[in-house]
Image (cartoon, rainbow, N blue to C red; front, side, top):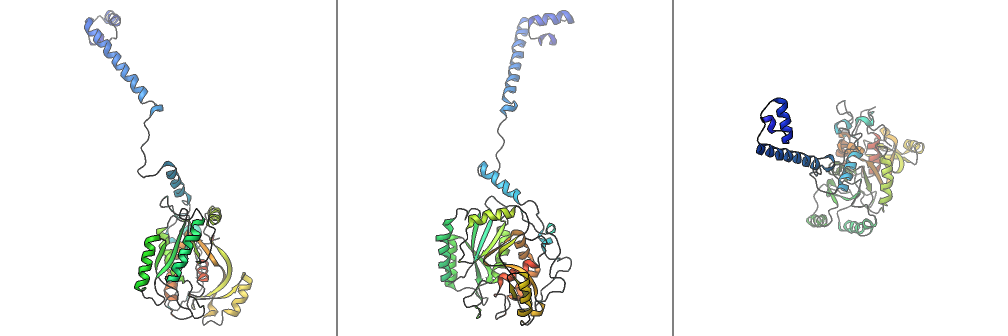
Length: 382
């Protein structure tokens, strides 16, 4: 009788009865089952319409904020430098294989002035850490006194508003040492002025380094190399997503839109880079001084024979090698990261900065960074 009551119509029930030899259901039960079957059929049809492939509910939104365009942009940035991501430990000059050290006298073991590791084994450009990472960060090493505060304000009022990519894809830092040239902290007036300026503009890179030593041979104090190294150590963490870092003189007017266009072309090669107005020189490591300048390798090689020997340890000068000097020069992230984390550079800076009278590396800090690049483990550096 259960089989008959499941028949959708009375006629069908009678047909089943005659076929199976079973008793039919009552008229009331058959009518009830008819409406039940049609109800189930209707529910099935409604379910198909609501959950068909063309009517799927929208996907869940990602957990971060921002519109779709900005999200897609951040993903493209994350993928931009994915190739060539390396470990910082591998970037140090053979630290696990007997690295060259600069001792208190500034000596380097013979035959170990340059590592032979390839770019594939060292710290390449990392993935971008957020959608707001700058492509380029420009640093202006500048003094802490009131006169240099006016110079910074001049750049903020005239240069920064001129180019739309400043503050978007190009970051700007004014690099200031937290110590005087004697290694003491700044006076209360200077500290208060820097505090108020940083609160208002937020563009000061305050680093643990000395301001320029008053070199009697150069007149106005110049940028110290230890400020740049300290800035690099700050950058590789705080701006890990940036691709290039540039050191520029405060009185340099940089066309940042053209600069970004050219550096994006250079970045497509995905190779370590060092760029600027190129000269050549040698470097007396024990004296922390460059010597033997030239516009090319041949001229510099000749000048080395004449200019380097008069230095106390000039006979052991390294070079000649190319270096970038002048209004500004720049490095790709991977080279900056190596400089910031190299024990060799650390020893060099520690010993060079311990000097308070000439010779010291305030003279020729650009050539010192060229020396760092020269001994770096980047065999494919452009």
